Image 1 (cartoon, helix red, strand yellow):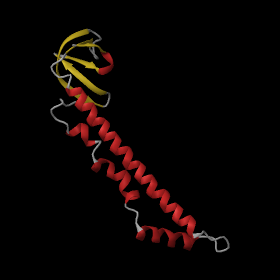
Image 2 (spheres, rainbow, N blue to C red; image 1 turned 135 degrees about the vertical axis):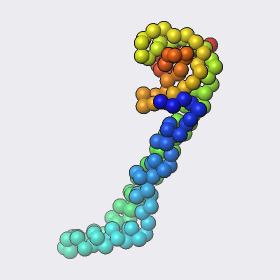
Image 3 (cartoon, helix red, strand yellow; image 1 turned 90 degrees about the vertical axis):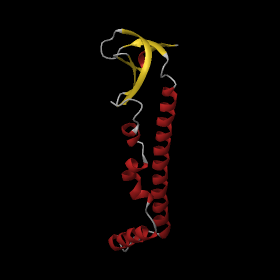
Length: 139
C-alpha cells in the first residue's frame, strides 16, 4: 500500500487508459465496422428470411449505447475515487479514535497518512492502521 502522497497506483485503475480495453472496441465502432458486420451477416443469413436494414441499424445503436454507458460508468467511478481522496485528505492531521485493523486494539492519535488498497482506505495513526469503518471519533 502506498501513502496518500503517491496516487498513481490508486488512480491507475480509474484512468481512461485502464478502462480503454473495455470500451475502445465498442466506442470505436464506426461506419466501416458496421459495413463489415452487415456484409458478414448478409453472407451468413438465410436467403429465405433476410434481416432488415432496420434491425442492422438497431444493432449499431445498441452497441453505441452500451459503449456510452460503459464510459459513463468509468467516469463516475473516477469521480467518486477523486472525491473520496479529497475528503480523506481532510483527515490528515486530525485526531481519531478507532480500532487497529490488525490487532483489534484501541487506537487514538493523529492521522499521519492514508493508504489505498483493495480493501479500501486505511488511516495511519502512529504504527497502527485504522479502516474507515473502524473509526469511532474524529476530533
